[in-house]
Length: 323
Image (cartoon, rainbow, N blue to C red):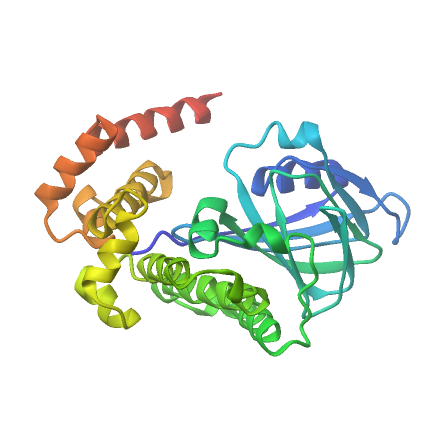
């Protein structure tokens, strides 16, 4: 089972590009920088939607992109946008920082803050859109690296960039199931790169162990073996210590896993692209071994059954389609 959906669009004209790119990511403003024949503008966009993140390949003629406060006010879900330079050059201004990107470099921006992108000539970028709550759970200091150039010449940063570049170039040759499974690898590599920049000495051992345990849970959320025993063994800590780490947060390991799985099922059930999968298929895909238990927990958390949620989502889609 997979939720991978790929769409490709070719654009001629800045007005159409403005509409398409704002819908694909977040509302933005554009300033055309003529580099070709007068009055011409060409651009391309391809996007692949995974379980939790979206990978896009975007390119156009020379352009300036501005995300201002009025654009931000129209946004809904906060995201981190990790921009990998594939071709050409780009200048990113974000958080009072300026990153000059060349092929192999990448930078991270927040959809909740203003930023500017300048591409003085034709270019291509791969953009990884990650919900902020996911990356913040896996790496609590992600905000510290916004607007900072991650050089492709760095061994770990270069490895992340090469992986994403290779994925973009081969994504049409891979089966949806394989592509879908690679989401965990992309996130793991990105977090590893951010960790390489982070001064871990400033964190206590329990904080580090809790972060690593949460990261492991996110990476193995679909694995039905995921349990306190499984996590403790993988992280090299005792199960008692693991329970203590989560107790300090007022939670438990099992409750944390359950809430993440329920949230993932809720998002999947609400997706129009997933209507051909049953609620049972979706529950099993996200690691639930007992379908009856899933239905009870889902109803308890959302005060609605999976079937009722799916009907609501379909009705909302029908309304949008008819407008």
